[in-house]
Amino acid sequence: MIFDSHAHYNDEAFSDDLEDILAEFPDAGIGSVVNVADTLESIDRVLELSRRYPFFYAALGIHPGECENLTEEALETVRARLHEPKVVAVGEIGLDYHWDTPEREIQQRWFRAQIRLAQDERKPIIIHSRDAAQDTLQIMREMHAERTGGVLHCYSYSLEMAREFIRLGFYIGVGGVVTFRNARKLKEVVEHIPIEKIVLETDCPYMAPTPHRGERNTSLNLPCVVQAIAELKRMDPEGVIRITEDNARQLYYLK
Image (cartoon, rainbow, N blue to C red; front, side):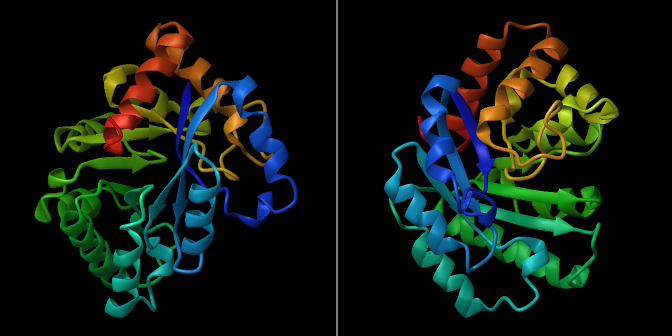
C-alpha cells in the first residue's frame, strides 16, 4: 500500500470534502498518511485526525517560517503533545532562506531546539530546508541529528548533498516535483540514490504532480509519483510502492 509520508489534511483546502477524498483511499491503494503540523495552531487538528482515522499518523513541529514568536514555554506544549499514541515525528522543522523571514539566527536557534526536543523524546525529525543546504547540514552534524534520523522533506538539492544527508541516516522525501519536466536535479537524485532511502510524499494540498500541476494535491495523486520513480529506477511500480512503504515505516519507527 502507498504510504504518504508528509501531508497537511488539516489545511482549510480540505474543509469541505475531506471525507469524500478519504473514501477513495482503499481503491487507490493508499494505506497510511502522516499529517504534519507546522504551527502551534495546527497541532490540535492534526491530532484530532490521527485519533479519528486509523490510517492517519501525526507529526508535530514548528515550521521555520513560523518560529519568530516561538518561546520555550510553547515548545514545552509541543513536547507534552508528542506523548500522544500516534505521534511519530517532530516536524516539520528546519530552515527556509527562500523567504528569509524570520532572521536566519532565529530560524537556526529553533531548528537546534527542536532537534534537541526530538532527541529527548526519541522521535525522528522531518526537515524543511529551502535554499539553506549548507547551514542545514552543518546544524544536523553539530547536533548529531543521526541520533534520531528522519527525512529531508520535499528534497530540492543536488545529488552530492543527498548523499551527505543519507550518510547521516536520513531519507529523501520525493513528491510531485519529480514529475515536472524541468526537475533535472531531483530526477538525478532519484535515479542515483538507493530506492531504500526514498519515501513518497504529497505535501498536499501543495505540489501536485503532472498532469495535475496547479490543482489541489491529495494522496490520490501519488501513483503519478510512483510511476515517475519507477521509470527513473527502471523498476516495476509495485516494487516502488512496497519498498517505499517499508522505508516510511522504518523512518517513523513503525516496524
